[in-house]
Amino acid sequence: MRRTKEESEKTREDLLNAAVRIFSEKGVARSTLDEIAKAAGVTRGAVYWHFENKTQIFEALHERLHRPFVDMILEDLEKDHPEPMVQLRDLCIQIMLDIEKGKQRQQTLILFFMKSDYSGDLAPYKDKHREKKAESMRLFKRYIEKAKTAGKLNTQADPELLTQCISCFMKGTFLNIWITRKALILKTKRLN
Image (cartoon, rainbow, N blue to C red):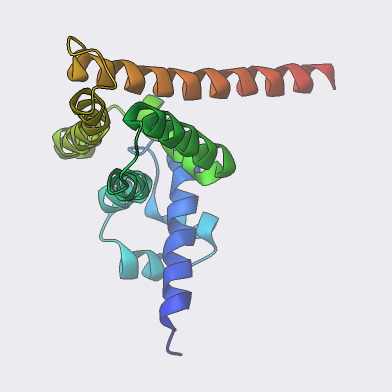
C-alpha cells in the first residue's frame, strides 16, 4: 500500500512525539528504536523509513523545537516597529504562550534543558545545538540594537548582557512554571 505524503508526515510526527516521551522517561542512551516504534504505534521499519538512528531522532526533535522560534523571530524582525523593546517584550510573551499551549513543545524543552547531557552518541550535537542557541541570541540582540539605534535605549546599554538577561529570564520562568506544576501534581497524587 502506498502512503500519502500527509500520512508519512503524520507517522514522522507520531515518532517524534513518542521519542520525546521515551527519551524523557528513560534517557536517550537507554531508549530503543523498538520502544519508540511501539509507543508511536508503528513498526520498526517505519522508524527506519524516517530516521537512521536515535541520534537522528534527537536532532530532529531539536530542529522541530528550534526552527519555529527562529522563524517567528525572523518574521517579527521584518516589521518596522516604533518601539523595538516593546516589540521584543511582545515576542517573548508570544513565545511563552506558544510553549504553554503545546505539551509536546514543553516536554521537548525539558528534554533539552534538563535531561540531555550530550555524552556518548550525543556528544557531536553539543556544539551544533550551542550554535543554534547562539543564533537565537544574536536575533534577540538585534531588537536591542534596533532600540539603541532608534534612541529608545540608553547608549550605555550592553546588548550582549541584556540579551543574556532576557534569555535567562525566559528559561528561568519556564523552568519555574514546570517545577511548580510537577510539585502540584505530586501533591495532588499524595492527597488522593
